[in-house]
Image (tube, rainbow, N blue to C red; front, side, top):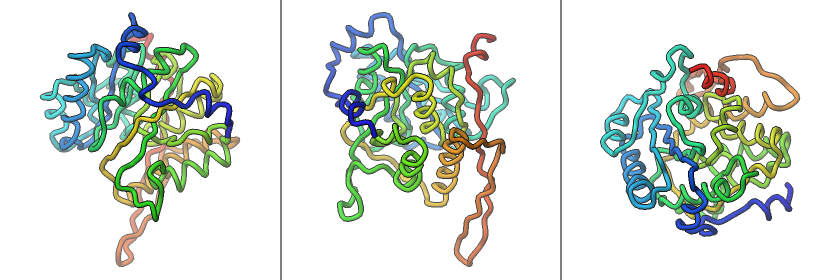
Length: 306
Protein backbone atom coordinates (compact mmCIF):
# COMPACT_ATOMS: atom_id res chain seq x y z
CA UNK A 1 0.00 0.00 0.00
CA UNK A 2 1.17 3.52 -0.77
CA UNK A 3 1.02 5.38 2.54
CA UNK A 4 1.67 8.67 0.75
CA UNK A 5 -1.38 8.08 -1.44
CA UNK A 6 -3.51 7.23 1.58
CA UNK A 7 -2.57 10.48 3.29
CA UNK A 8 -3.11 12.60 0.17
CA UNK A 9 -6.27 11.03 -1.17
CA UNK A 10 -8.28 10.00 1.89
CA UNK A 11 -10.92 12.52 2.94
CA UNK A 12 -13.95 12.92 5.21
CA UNK A 13 -17.32 14.03 3.90
CA UNK A 14 -17.18 17.01 6.29
CA UNK A 15 -14.14 18.41 4.43
CA UNK A 16 -16.45 20.38 2.12
CA UNK A 17 -19.52 22.46 2.92
CA UNK A 18 -22.47 22.60 0.55
CA UNK A 19 -21.79 26.29 -0.27
CA UNK A 20 -18.19 25.40 -1.16
CA UNK A 21 -19.31 22.62 -3.48
CA UNK A 22 -22.01 24.79 -5.06
CA UNK A 23 -19.41 27.46 -5.79
CA UNK A 24 -16.99 24.88 -7.21
CA UNK A 25 -19.70 23.26 -9.34
CA UNK A 26 -20.31 26.29 -11.55
CA UNK A 27 -21.41 24.91 -14.95
CA UNK A 28 -20.51 21.28 -14.15
CA UNK A 29 -23.51 18.97 -14.34
CA UNK A 30 -24.13 16.00 -12.03
CA UNK A 31 -26.13 12.84 -12.70
CA UNK A 32 -27.10 10.61 -9.80
CA UNK A 33 -27.58 7.01 -10.97
CA UNK A 34 -29.28 4.33 -8.88
CA UNK A 35 -28.91 0.78 -10.30
CA UNK A 36 -31.81 -1.26 -8.92
CA UNK A 37 -33.16 -4.78 -9.08
CA UNK A 38 -36.15 -5.70 -6.91
CA UNK A 39 -35.60 -2.85 -4.46
CA UNK A 40 -39.17 -1.52 -4.18
CA UNK A 41 -38.87 -1.41 -0.40
CA UNK A 42 -35.95 1.05 -0.32
CA UNK A 43 -35.46 2.80 -3.68
CA UNK A 44 -38.26 5.29 -3.05
CA UNK A 45 -36.60 6.58 0.12
CA UNK A 46 -33.24 6.92 -1.63
CA UNK A 47 -34.74 8.95 -4.47
CA UNK A 48 -37.07 11.07 -2.32
CA UNK A 49 -34.44 12.17 0.18
CA UNK A 50 -31.78 13.01 -2.39
CA UNK A 51 -34.26 14.85 -4.58
CA UNK A 52 -35.52 16.96 -1.67
CA UNK A 53 -32.12 17.89 -0.24
CA UNK A 54 -29.82 18.02 -3.26
CA UNK A 55 -32.08 19.00 -6.17
CA UNK A 56 -34.91 21.06 -4.76
CA UNK A 57 -32.97 22.68 -1.90
CA UNK A 58 -29.23 22.69 -2.59
CA UNK A 59 -29.31 22.29 -6.41
CA UNK A 60 -26.17 20.15 -6.40
CA UNK A 61 -27.63 17.27 -8.44
CA UNK A 62 -29.08 17.94 -11.89
CA UNK A 63 -30.85 14.63 -12.52
CA UNK A 64 -31.72 11.42 -10.69
CA UNK A 65 -31.93 8.36 -12.91
CA UNK A 66 -32.86 4.86 -11.77
CA UNK A 67 -31.80 1.99 -14.02
CA UNK A 68 -34.18 -0.91 -13.38
CA UNK A 69 -32.30 -4.15 -13.97
CA UNK A 70 -35.03 -6.70 -14.77
CA UNK A 71 -37.00 -6.17 -11.55
CA UNK A 72 -40.02 -8.38 -10.94
CA UNK A 73 -41.43 -6.22 -8.14
CA UNK A 74 -42.67 -2.59 -8.11
CA UNK A 75 -39.21 -0.98 -8.29
CA UNK A 76 -40.05 0.88 -11.52
CA UNK A 77 -43.32 2.32 -10.21
CA UNK A 78 -41.96 3.22 -6.78
CA UNK A 79 -38.92 5.03 -8.22
CA UNK A 80 -41.10 6.89 -10.72
CA UNK A 81 -43.53 8.00 -8.00
CA UNK A 82 -40.56 9.25 -5.94
CA UNK A 83 -39.55 11.59 -8.76
CA UNK A 84 -36.75 9.77 -10.55
CA UNK A 85 -36.41 9.29 -14.28
CA UNK A 86 -36.58 5.51 -14.61
CA UNK A 87 -35.30 3.36 -17.48
CA UNK A 88 -35.42 -0.39 -17.86
CA UNK A 89 -31.89 -1.54 -18.60
CA UNK A 90 -33.04 -4.01 -21.26
CA UNK A 91 -34.81 -1.21 -23.18
CA UNK A 92 -31.80 1.12 -23.41
CA UNK A 93 -30.06 0.83 -26.80
CA UNK A 94 -31.80 -2.40 -27.79
CA UNK A 95 -29.36 -2.66 -30.70
CA UNK A 96 -26.58 -3.40 -28.19
CA UNK A 97 -28.47 -6.27 -26.59
CA UNK A 98 -28.82 -6.78 -22.87
CA UNK A 99 -27.02 -8.70 -20.14
CA UNK A 100 -27.99 -9.27 -16.52
CA UNK A 101 -26.14 -7.44 -13.79
CA UNK A 102 -25.31 -4.27 -11.93
CA UNK A 103 -22.41 -3.34 -14.20
CA UNK A 104 -24.70 -3.57 -17.22
CA UNK A 105 -27.09 -1.09 -15.61
CA UNK A 106 -24.23 1.30 -14.85
CA UNK A 107 -22.82 1.01 -18.40
CA UNK A 108 -26.26 1.53 -19.93
CA UNK A 109 -26.75 4.64 -17.75
CA UNK A 110 -24.21 6.47 -19.91
CA UNK A 111 -26.71 6.40 -22.79
CA UNK A 112 -29.55 8.04 -20.83
CA UNK A 113 -27.75 10.55 -18.60
CA UNK A 114 -26.00 13.82 -19.39
CA UNK A 115 -23.97 14.78 -16.32
CA UNK A 116 -20.27 15.62 -16.51
CA UNK A 117 -19.97 13.77 -13.21
CA UNK A 118 -21.83 10.53 -12.45
CA UNK A 119 -22.55 9.48 -8.86
CA UNK A 120 -23.62 5.88 -8.21
CA UNK A 121 -25.70 5.05 -5.15
CA UNK A 122 -27.03 1.60 -4.27
CA UNK A 123 -30.80 1.21 -4.10
CA UNK A 124 -30.89 -1.04 -1.02
CA UNK A 125 -29.67 1.47 1.59
CA UNK A 126 -31.36 1.35 4.98
CA UNK A 127 -29.06 3.41 7.24
CA UNK A 128 -27.49 6.30 5.36
CA UNK A 129 -27.72 10.04 4.75
CA UNK A 130 -27.80 12.38 1.79
CA UNK A 131 -24.33 13.73 2.61
CA UNK A 132 -23.02 10.65 0.77
CA UNK A 133 -23.50 12.52 -2.50
CA UNK A 134 -21.69 15.81 -1.73
CA UNK A 135 -18.98 13.77 0.03
CA UNK A 136 -18.31 11.81 -3.16
CA UNK A 137 -18.42 14.96 -5.28
CA UNK A 138 -15.95 16.87 -3.14
CA UNK A 139 -12.68 15.60 -4.68
CA UNK A 140 -14.07 15.74 -8.24
CA UNK A 141 -15.33 19.32 -7.94
CA UNK A 142 -12.19 20.65 -6.26
CA UNK A 143 -9.37 18.73 -7.97
CA UNK A 144 -9.31 18.25 -11.74
CA UNK A 145 -6.74 15.45 -11.48
CA UNK A 146 -9.16 13.15 -9.63
CA UNK A 147 -11.11 10.86 -11.94
CA UNK A 148 -12.82 8.42 -9.57
CA UNK A 149 -13.90 8.64 -5.92
CA UNK A 150 -14.79 5.66 -3.72
CA UNK A 151 -16.82 5.90 -0.55
CA UNK A 152 -16.15 3.97 2.64
CA UNK A 153 -18.08 3.82 5.90
CA UNK A 154 -18.69 2.09 9.17
CA UNK A 155 -21.39 -0.55 9.23
CA UNK A 156 -23.56 -0.26 12.35
CA UNK A 157 -24.39 -3.49 14.14
CA UNK A 158 -21.18 -5.31 13.21
CA UNK A 159 -20.09 -7.47 16.13
CA UNK A 160 -16.64 -6.41 17.31
CA UNK A 161 -15.93 -10.05 18.21
CA UNK A 162 -16.17 -11.12 14.57
CA UNK A 163 -15.09 -7.96 12.79
CA UNK A 164 -14.65 -4.24 13.06
CA UNK A 165 -17.11 -1.67 11.74
CA UNK A 166 -14.76 -0.60 8.92
CA UNK A 167 -14.54 -4.07 7.45
CA UNK A 168 -16.17 -4.59 4.09
CA UNK A 169 -18.64 -7.32 3.32
CA UNK A 170 -17.81 -10.99 3.04
CA UNK A 171 -16.83 -10.81 -0.63
CA UNK A 172 -14.58 -7.81 0.06
CA UNK A 173 -12.71 -9.45 2.94
CA UNK A 174 -12.49 -12.98 1.54
CA UNK A 175 -12.05 -12.27 -2.18
CA UNK A 176 -11.39 -8.68 -3.23
CA UNK A 177 -8.86 -7.69 -0.59
CA UNK A 178 -6.67 -10.81 -0.99
CA UNK A 179 -6.93 -10.46 -4.78
CA UNK A 180 -5.75 -6.85 -4.59
CA UNK A 181 -2.90 -7.83 -2.28
CA UNK A 182 -1.74 -10.48 -4.73
CA UNK A 183 -2.25 -8.77 -8.09
CA UNK A 184 -2.79 -5.03 -7.57
CA UNK A 185 -0.96 -4.05 -4.34
CA UNK A 186 -0.92 -0.27 -5.05
CA UNK A 187 -4.71 -0.36 -4.55
CA UNK A 188 -4.46 -1.90 -1.08
CA UNK A 189 -5.15 1.47 0.54
CA UNK A 190 -8.77 1.42 -0.62
CA UNK A 191 -10.75 0.84 2.57
CA UNK A 192 -13.77 -0.68 0.82
CA UNK A 193 -12.93 -1.34 -2.83
CA UNK A 194 -16.33 -2.89 -3.63
CA UNK A 195 -18.41 -0.09 -2.10
CA UNK A 196 -21.47 0.68 -4.21
CA UNK A 197 -21.25 4.40 -3.51
CA UNK A 198 -18.75 6.02 -5.86
CA UNK A 199 -18.44 8.84 -8.37
CA UNK A 200 -16.58 9.23 -11.63
CA UNK A 201 -16.01 11.70 -14.43
CA UNK A 202 -18.31 10.77 -17.30
CA UNK A 203 -15.60 11.05 -19.96
CA UNK A 204 -13.32 8.72 -18.00
CA UNK A 205 -16.00 6.10 -17.31
CA UNK A 206 -16.97 6.10 -20.98
CA UNK A 207 -13.42 5.02 -21.83
CA UNK A 208 -13.42 2.00 -19.52
CA UNK A 209 -14.36 -1.58 -20.27
CA UNK A 210 -17.21 -2.46 -17.90
CA UNK A 211 -17.95 -5.95 -16.52
CA UNK A 212 -21.69 -6.47 -16.63
CA UNK A 213 -21.90 -7.96 -13.13
CA UNK A 214 -20.40 -7.19 -9.72
CA UNK A 215 -16.88 -6.99 -11.12
CA UNK A 216 -17.55 -3.41 -12.19
CA UNK A 217 -16.18 -1.78 -9.03
CA UNK A 218 -12.85 -3.63 -8.99
CA UNK A 219 -12.41 -3.23 -12.75
CA UNK A 220 -12.95 0.53 -12.57
CA UNK A 221 -10.31 0.88 -9.86
CA UNK A 222 -7.70 -1.24 -11.64
CA UNK A 223 -8.27 0.40 -15.02
CA UNK A 224 -8.21 3.92 -13.55
CA UNK A 225 -4.95 3.22 -11.73
CA UNK A 226 -3.36 1.80 -14.88
CA UNK A 227 -4.53 4.50 -17.29
CA UNK A 228 -4.47 7.61 -15.08
CA UNK A 229 -2.22 6.74 -12.15
CA UNK A 230 -2.97 6.12 -8.49
CA UNK A 231 -3.54 9.79 -7.68
CA UNK A 232 -6.51 9.80 -10.07
CA UNK A 233 -8.36 7.83 -7.34
CA UNK A 234 -9.56 9.32 -4.06
CA UNK A 235 -11.68 7.93 -1.23
CA UNK A 236 -14.04 9.57 1.24
CA UNK A 237 -15.21 8.49 4.68
CA UNK A 238 -19.00 8.77 4.46
CA UNK A 239 -19.79 7.89 8.08
CA UNK A 240 -22.17 4.97 8.58
CA UNK A 241 -24.13 2.81 6.14
CA UNK A 242 -26.32 -0.27 6.28
CA UNK A 243 -28.04 -2.21 3.54
CA UNK A 244 -29.85 -5.45 2.87
CA UNK A 245 -27.53 -8.47 2.92
CA UNK A 246 -27.50 -11.00 0.11
CA UNK A 247 -27.87 -14.76 0.61
CA UNK A 248 -24.58 -16.65 0.84
CA UNK A 249 -25.08 -18.59 -2.41
CA UNK A 250 -25.66 -15.32 -4.29
CA UNK A 251 -22.38 -14.07 -2.85
CA UNK A 252 -20.68 -17.03 -4.53
CA UNK A 253 -21.77 -15.69 -7.91
CA UNK A 254 -20.68 -12.18 -6.91
CA UNK A 255 -17.25 -13.49 -5.87
CA UNK A 256 -16.89 -15.31 -9.20
CA UNK A 257 -17.53 -12.07 -11.08
CA UNK A 258 -15.03 -10.13 -8.96
CA UNK A 259 -12.38 -12.82 -9.42
CA UNK A 260 -12.97 -12.90 -13.17
CA UNK A 261 -12.57 -9.13 -13.47
CA UNK A 262 -9.29 -9.32 -11.55
CA UNK A 263 -8.06 -12.35 -13.49
CA UNK A 264 -8.78 -10.62 -16.81
CA UNK A 265 -6.67 -7.66 -15.67
CA UNK A 266 -3.76 -9.74 -14.47
CA UNK A 267 -1.11 -11.28 -16.70
CA UNK A 268 -3.69 -13.87 -17.69
CA UNK A 269 -6.62 -13.51 -20.08
CA UNK A 270 -10.24 -14.54 -20.01
CA UNK A 271 -12.60 -15.17 -22.90
CA UNK A 272 -15.66 -17.02 -21.56
CA UNK A 273 -19.07 -15.35 -21.32
CA UNK A 274 -20.20 -17.50 -18.40
CA UNK A 275 -18.54 -19.61 -15.73
CA UNK A 276 -20.32 -22.67 -14.27
CA UNK A 277 -20.32 -22.32 -10.48
CA UNK A 278 -21.14 -25.53 -8.58
CA UNK A 279 -22.89 -25.00 -5.24
CA UNK A 280 -24.60 -27.31 -2.77
CA UNK A 281 -27.81 -27.15 -0.76
CA UNK A 282 -29.15 -29.53 1.89
CA UNK A 283 -29.28 -33.13 0.84
CA UNK A 284 -26.72 -32.52 -0.57
CA UNK A 285 -28.37 -31.18 -3.70
CA UNK A 286 -26.11 -29.95 -6.47
CA UNK A 287 -26.76 -26.62 -8.14
CA UNK A 288 -24.75 -25.44 -11.11
CA UNK A 289 -25.18 -21.73 -11.75
CA UNK A 290 -24.01 -20.16 -14.99
CA UNK A 291 -22.47 -16.90 -13.79
CA UNK A 292 -22.37 -14.16 -16.43
CA UNK A 293 -18.86 -12.67 -16.64
CA UNK A 294 -19.08 -10.71 -19.89
CA UNK A 295 -17.71 -7.19 -20.26
CA UNK A 296 -19.02 -4.25 -22.22
CA UNK A 297 -16.53 -2.27 -24.36
CA UNK A 298 -15.86 1.41 -23.63
CA UNK A 299 -19.09 3.31 -24.28
CA UNK A 300 -17.35 6.39 -25.71
CA UNK A 301 -17.34 5.38 -29.41
CA UNK A 302 -20.94 4.16 -29.12
CA UNK A 303 -22.05 7.45 -27.57
CA UNK A 304 -20.54 9.32 -30.50
CA UNK A 305 -22.60 7.27 -32.97
CA UNK A 306 -25.97 7.87 -31.34
